[in-house]
Amino acid sequence: MVLKNTVFANADNQVLTLNLDAQYSSMLTEASHKNILTTLQENFAITDVKINLDTLTEQTLAQKEIQANNKKTEIRQKEFLADEGVQKLQQVFNTKIDLNSIKEVKNV
Image 1 (tube, rainbow, N blue to C red):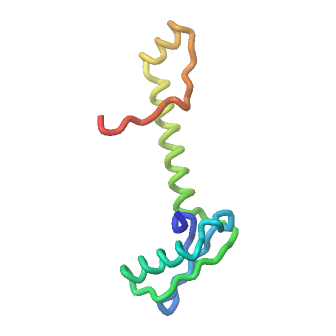
Image 2 (image 1 turned 90 degrees about the vertical axis):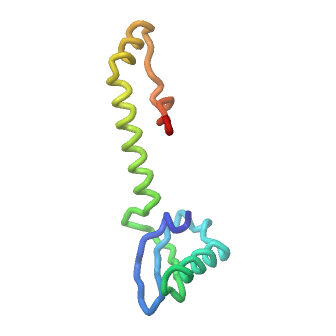
Image 3 (image 1 turned 180 degrees about the vertical axis):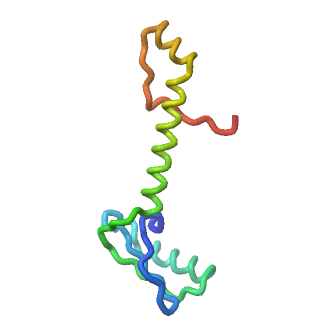
């Protein structure tokens, strides 16, 4: 989760520098830093990773995922509300749909 809230800053002499959104500073523990470093060392030619706390101006992966999920939810809600059967049920029973109750059904 720490990495999803960072943006790339620099890679120099096998040292990777990332900027972590300051609001997630509590997630950056010694253990999480060590896990990140270990994973990077096992998979890439990285000798060290530096994570700076900063107010970010770029979107992090976590923010991009939230934005994409919100867009998918909005599309799903519009498609559901545009369904003729749903519209007919709303008319017959004089009801409104709780948009938060519309969920994606997987593996159907």
